[in-house]
Length: 287
Image 1 (tube, rainbow, N blue to C red):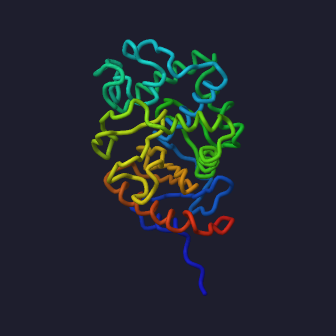
Image 2 (image 1 turned 135 degrees about the vertical axis):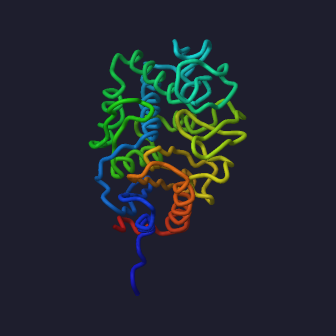
Image 3 (image 1 turned 90 degrees about the horizontal axis):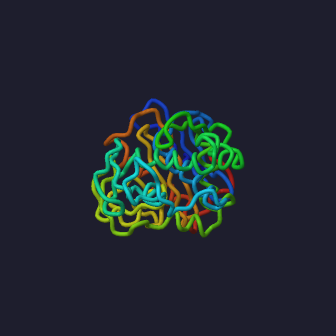
């Protein structure tokens, strides 16, 4: 009986020049396709890495989620508002377009303001704190923040799977802190997910986008509503399904566009069908 092709082999038919992908459980990688050590920009996946560094700082006592932030944050905005895209700052730009807690406005500027607050609280550049607080202890040797904390990191599938295992079974923060970070903040706010459209409501955690009841979506259509993660404008994504105890990361060399969400969602459904509850992941890589 022939061995079926790896589930992730479907990326070979995507309209991209280069791609790599991987799936992991809380303890081990179960499949990779492509060069899992290919180092490339991950765009907005950067946001959840930097947000996680912020959670480490919260547990260390350097930062508090309900600390008020200085400009460019609107008056009354907190660290929590910035991480949950609820500060009132626009996608790009420092002039607020809403009062804090009123709208879900996806904001690069908001995450950059959070980066400033993290650096001020810890006395370290964000890149250094991310490296020492998250990447180094997790063995993410290829991951580096090179510019904006909203979009400026490079990484590999191997490193993102290491991070995903941390999100499935945290060691750097408590389970309670991760649970808060992956729970809707400022419930009921509507807003846009860039490139996907408007959702009402548009649940978001502390840096993490939450799937909840969003449909259509870029994650698995059959995945748990508790699925969380982020995608990037560089044609990249990382999702974690805590109910299925699985995570999937994909990197490509093509900018995000209409081509991506249907392919990502279909692939993610196949991942869950193959490795989800009641399935035998095989205990190793299916490269």
